[in-house]
Length: 97
Image 1 (tube, rainbow, N blue to C red):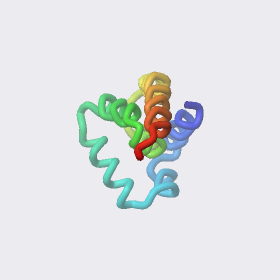
Image 2: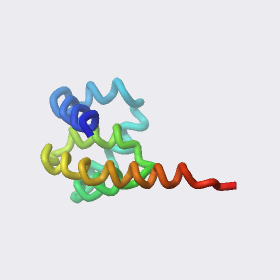
Image 3: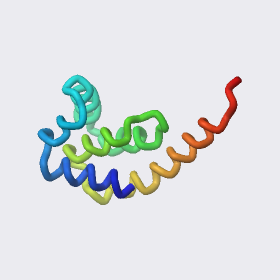
Image 4: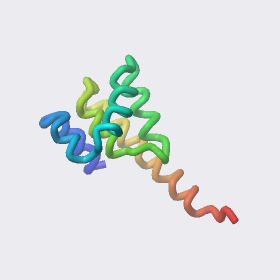
């Protein structure tokens, strides 16, 4: 949660220029367009954080570019990350064979 908050705040301060050091342009454009075009950015961001397959770090950095407040972002992370981690643990512990 601390790392997600730091990523959010760094991108909030330094903008797209910093984010482009971590992801290629194609990946950035894909997520930026989907999330930024939405009027419900906070809802889509929360869904992305709750899903155990979403690229959390990228979503947190893109959230730093949005108009979402830090505190709304923070509470989504505080509630969503543990739930997502729980599901990842459950899914990875199941034997599929």
